[in-house]
Length: 404
Length: 128
Image: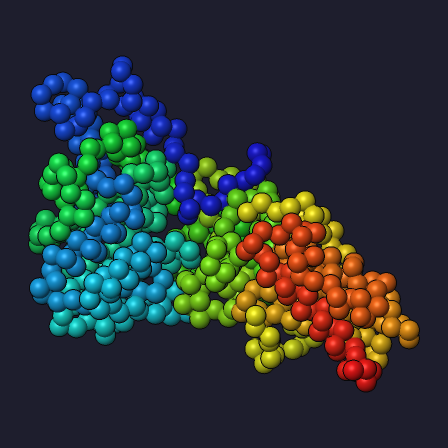
């Protein structure tokens, strides 16, 4: 077993060696290096063929038409293109957008920008399980609503949104529905032929593909129009200009092909690992799994170890690459806005660690992680005045704290 | 974030972890911070009749720098008079531990905890 152990698959995944091999073949003089937009010679034609093959592979994972896939640099760009693109194109129809408080920053910050431009945004609050319900969306829909944007799987807590039911609602009301699926490809089966989703963002690097590649699904029937955000040579049917990065897109295509092929296997593997991990932790006092226990992807385990601060816990877990929802890991000094939105107490929000498993995680690694976590929590609780107070029966919510 | 060697040393081998009986007349307790901010420090001192800090204990909920700041504070307080201890400045703690700018608040909190513990002792014993 090699240390440190990578348990941060929700942040990014390693490129699958089979993917890397395909990418290498698209770089050098001997390889497929041409510009896919070159129409006058074989180099361009071959590159175009590779890119179109990749487009088909991406479309096949989500049961879409390849002509509905627009290449981008990643899910952030896809989110920007979808939300700003729709807002700018349809602003004559209305200027109201619905999203949630637990979206990725790529969605939240894009919505903030649109607010500065005069759009109105409703931010739905999840329940304590981190779930946004179709009823909430229905309650927020207005005459002037043009777009609903919600993520398929939450990046911090792994909770799945019921996009099938929400799509029914938005379609019946003539409102467009955008879904950020960066965290769900290869984890949850997606059938865009059945789902009434109009736009969907994809990322390559969360699904064993390379960083810097992504795509946006833009529905053809009923047709969705977008105002381009990147202008230039008119690539991607004018929706996103810029020379296509053949090697990146070929990598994404191969990664998505494998995701489809190995979806069940990957899911069963993640499920077994998560169970194994949780079985070793759940008997510790005051340990909580954040987010719905049922409506979730198995590979993402966001755990709060009450009365232990997240960053100090990370310091003890130095042989593990995990991430913390705690304040101190970011420059903002604010604990995770996602956990706060779930109504978790401050202590619990500050005490959370996200362990995320993947295709290459082993039982041995999970056992090691669980043992380390146990020991660290024990050690830090010995150091924690909050643990003392809890053990003495003090109600921490009643204490007059000296905020600083 | 990379931690300084001194922070890691205090984090891995914290000095003077523990609890004194806060009901004792010769014990002063300072508790500062809030769970909402991700830091709570409890610093306690046991003072001799001639005003010298004989023992100091702490427990801290917070990041590694907060733990190190309070651990170092207890080390420095031991053997000092109340007046000397109250002179310990956050800048000295921060410098000794080589805290980065985003962690300066941890040393500020430790200074507050020292002052609160001294103040508590003085109040208990009618010293102004």
